[in-house]
Image 1 (cartoon, rainbow, N blue to C red):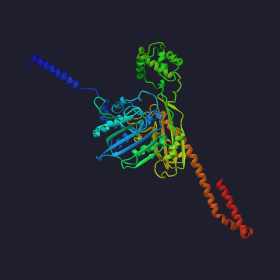
Image 2 (cartoon, rainbow, N blue to C red):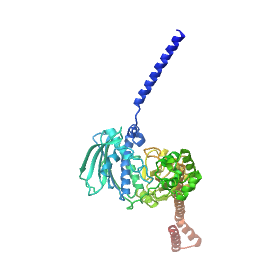
Image 3 (spheres, one colour):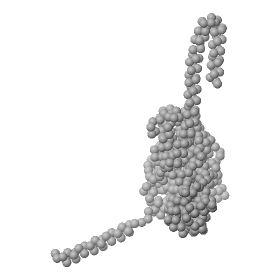
Image 4 (cartoon, rainbow, N blue to C red):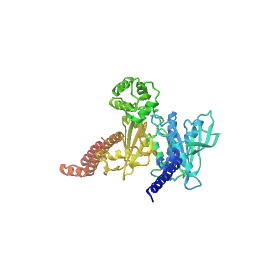
Length: 537
């Protein structure tokens, strides 16, 4: 083959390869499309807590109860929640009904709340609440639809003067939009409230990490709630409220500047409607006065009267550095409502029969600009099991966390605490042993969970430190109780020895002092009387 022919052949092959590569690129481009959030979670349902049938049942109940309690509290209503788990004609399916006496839901909002992922009112606000992401109850409905083909059924009423509305809803996963199967006005004996019914593939089992345990722990952290639960065996569990006082309403706050990251700050600058950079800082963040706003601008070398939307990326970087160089008060804490020491005590006393209880509620603290409060309580002795590891109850915004205990900051902080110092046995890297129940509650405007299923608290140093300080305070109270108990037992043991030998002392004295029977009896009675008075003291 001549050089000219070879070159021509190589050029032809190059053109063919070029066209083939271009055709593949077009073919690949045609396959690209947007992924709906509901499509993503349908394939990754384990991220939401639906990774096995037993856990799916618990997650479904949990999401419904969380919504019910939040709704009642925001409306200023003492919660009354009814949970019923019924078997169906299919062995591996159960029907879950959750009913509350809350304010109800406006008709137009019902389809979106229950059949659209990432739809809700809590994601963008800084205020303590159980739900955060707008996923929970709609994800439970999606899982039910996926495993049984059945719609989620909702009945809701907002007033005795308004009708009750009934919906049967499916979730269009490709569009992440609700599909209304049935809509009607119905008779309902509740003046206001909401009832949700979901049929799902699941498994019921008592014991650890069960619906039963979840509801019992919910009662500990929510002593103002009355809970009625009927399990698949038609057994009824009544958890009456231990308090008739609602928790104070949490207040919504603006973000604290110390929690800002550069990308978020740039986004806020470009989307804010403030006319000047100074007013943007003053109105967009908590604890930034007009004086502080000007001080921050001066440190950043920026004009306080500049338009926020015209601030460039490098200028925003300077602004963020100036924020961290400026002393700004910690954010207000009325956005976080703790359970409180008295109510933690009532919750523990209601669920656990013990000899000793201790509670503490720490002062508010901050992580990434987000206020949070850590509380702890313990129950010791009584009817609690003598052997085995202590029982650890973890809560976040009053919600029990039953899974991923080993991955949780709460567990790590408790295990890192030296419980031997407080009179308990403990192996290295483990929980203490003995008749002990320990509870820890983390309350925040935004609890940093390790995943969307909200089962474990992330390992922020500020949060772990507060947990350790809280449990240590309870540990010191327990140590004082155990020391007093040991001293009392030692004294009683010594007195029992003396009591045993008093008659022998009387005989010895009779022989030494030549006493008669009446005199000996009198001495023994006097010694016994002194010993008894000493015991009572």
